[in-house]
Length: 128
Image 1: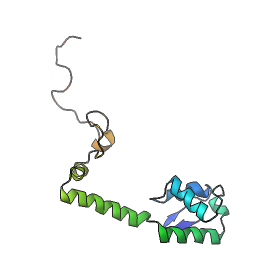
Image 2: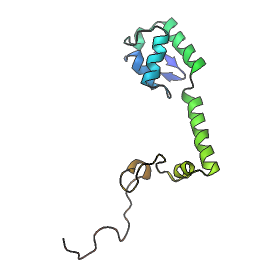
Image 3: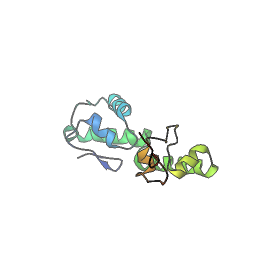
Image 4: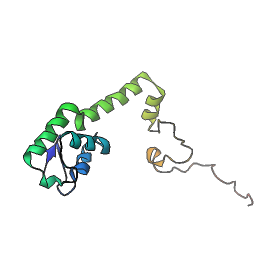
């Protein structure tokens, strides 16, 4: 089992997809890294030799910000937005979407479970 940036990569998956288990590496960066190192993206992680694993590990450590460093940076960026009182910072503080999505409907994930509010809905005794 290969361990890169503190994450165990799944042994039975192709390298191209197992690299995406690292926070900060998506499909395009994963392909780009393997292409630069001349590693077959279709090969399984368990079939990689030590040399290939070390080359991948060194490249990622040197040139890419992944896992803890990236999480810390993103957290600090959000913290800065909150401190300066920007609109996006206020939305983060309130736990609401900050990229312009509507909240009258949808955004249940951010807003949490529905809360019943008195006086909402149809009036009692109203006819259809």
